[in-house]
Length: 343
Ligand code: ATP
Image 1 (cartoon, rainbow, N blue to C red):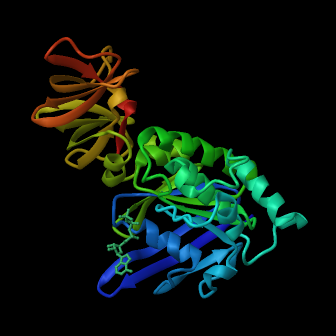
Image 2 (image 1 turned 120 degrees about the horizontal axis):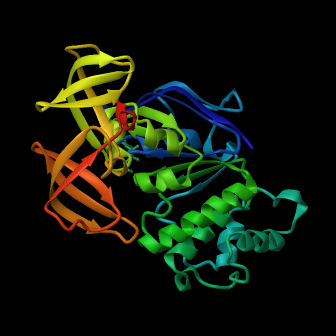
């Protein structure tokens, strides 16, 4: 397999800067996700790795070797796009075999053996003779995945492969893709605008915004310790608040927010400094000993295991997670000083 690095990659399309000095290291065998809102540069990054786009500046390296000018078909990558684009006039087996048009099957296998092996890998054994039109969207994407993997590439690139599918199919395919990736140990770069998908499928992820990388880390690290307001707001629900530091006792700062005093565990800030911080909805709890907030309930969404409650605290929108739908119009909740993350 291969590790991939982008070193100061910039890509301009006329006056539009699609990528602005993007540097990333994707490790050998890793499932790495690029996530961010529409237009932030995810696809352009993936296309630069694939070789469809030549960077305006910077370099793409595979195992340390500069591949910036190397054409797509010499990069040893398998690619699956959003619109799975199986050939409708070919059977499933022929579609998978198409992945082998430039290369023999790895390990000296015959074409038919390799096709059968790949269909088995994506749980579609025996589907060789079917027409793509006879398959569900999720099955078609699995065939597209089998086709991309047929020549045994050392890098797999997936650009929103699930976005055309309904929620349930997406979840199933997500598990499939993750299992296959783990079984093969293939370095994978995955593009999605769906932060929940990114959190659930990745070993590590990069949150992108406006052509730049905002933060890279494991799903847990990015979720628990966002480093910017953008990441705090984009990844998961969040309560982003700001106030002014009024004092400090050791590692705990007292902060005035709209005339109320809150305590935050942070080494940052001294009296008079403005501070922005966030608190995850599930960290706002009923029996907190500190930082109590009186929240007016606006709406509650019952989600089964949990309920998402939108409310207002001092004219600020807040979001809370509870076990059940609240029975009162107001809630008094609090959070521990160490459950606030200063941005
Ligand atoms: P989406 O989730 O909507 O696919 P994205 O994060 O993948 O978005 P890109 O497709 O990489 O974003 O686009 C980044 C920026 O570059 C956008 O402003 C887009 O309009 C612009 N862009 C991308 N490709 C081209 C092109 N071929 N010509 C001109 N501008 C382009």
